Length: 411
Image (cartoon, rainbow, N blue to C red):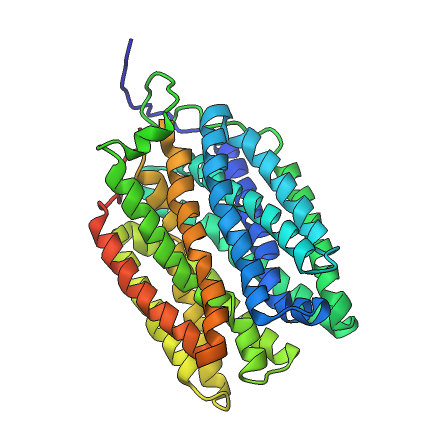
């Protein structure tokens, strides 16, 4: 018998808090380990004797693998539950982060980064689906934005580890220590995840338990959301990667900044990043997904262009721009968890969110490699700006072709 009803009783608040902090800590771990690589890239290139193109390829390989991981992780979460899969993928992700510290050549680096990327991609759709199903519809954007604010905290810890390790250790050793430390936060995240359970049907409309088929995502009812959502994810993330992957190396190589000066710029960017996550969710819930994404992507493109154009001598102007860039990059990212989970019904929500975000991420993964290749001809700064501007135009187009999902009740 098929029934549809809305359960008015609120969920156990202590359980909601556990889910919130568990997913927050997991995303913070992702931010910590993922942002270590761009910071350490200069040392890795020098130690292993890599070219800039190989550095870009190592970055892209992890992102491409994350696309596969996102699809697999989302599918497993739909079949076996969110929490069980979440614990598995975060454990494996931390393991391969630590193994990256042992790389002795490009081939080993590529293997560990690819496996790390696979499990990194698997975590996002699982955690996003879990949190979205616990959050009230009118606060879903803010709830998921708060979860994503942990990325900025993780990035800040990575930047601190970068500054301290390079202050006390030679560059050839410092980056290895950074990745070895990447194992430790996983222990905390796993402890927090104890006693969690999947959503007990208190925030969703009750229906018979169903397991959706993968092909349903490409059936007439969902095909548009799947295809356009993936394209939106691809171009949007490509613009983000254009900035976040290469800015540390750009500041060091093209602007001639020291490790401490580069870290200062990154600190200002991290502050803006955290503010963007926290405030961006409120904007997404207030004015809707379409207008919020349009505002934030245009802001990213304009501030990113100005950041590349301003002379390094204008220190405080540059630091202000770094803060603004960080704000807009995370403000647009803050709405993606809500958007991608709202596009799909419960039976394929993890799979759908995994495909749109992570296949998009896999396509976007070519942008760091493209920038690395193009930088040999036009310079790193020009290559970053070119990819950023083109991707922004496409991203704004795709969001207006998708339906507005603000306030949608999850089924």
